Amino acid sequence: MLILNTSFHVHLNFDSEFKEWVRRTYIPSAVKSGLLTSPRFAALLIEVQEECVSYAVSFEAETAENAVEWHDNEGAELRAELHKRFGEGVVFFTTYMEELPLDC
Picture 1 (cartoon, rainbow, N blue to C red):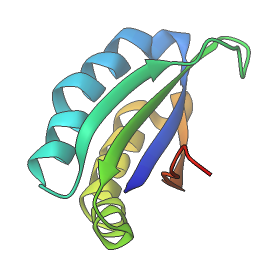
Picture 2: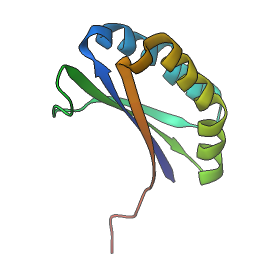
Picture 3: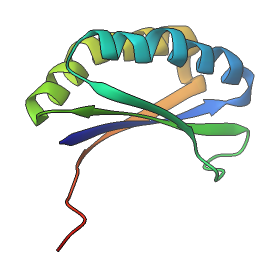
Picture 4: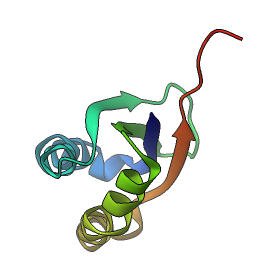
C-alpha cells in the first residue's frame, strides 16, 4: 500500500475558499479517478509560515504506478487549477510514502 500525501501552506486570506475547494473538487476528483482511495484531510498543528495555515491531504493507492499516474495527470491538472485560482497564496509539495508493517 502506498500513501500519497500533499501538504499545502495557505495564506490566511484564502483559508475558507481553499478548504471548500479541497472538499468539493480535489478530494472527489481523486476518488472518482479510481486510482486513489481513503482520503484524509488534516490541519497541521504547527505554524510553518507566518500568516499561513497548513493542511495535509492524503490518499491510499494500491500501487506506486497508480499514485504516479494520478499525480502526473489528473493531479497535475488540479494543481494547475489551484495555482490559477490562488496564485502564490497556496504552495504545496507531494510525498510518496510506503506503508510498513507494524511488526518487526
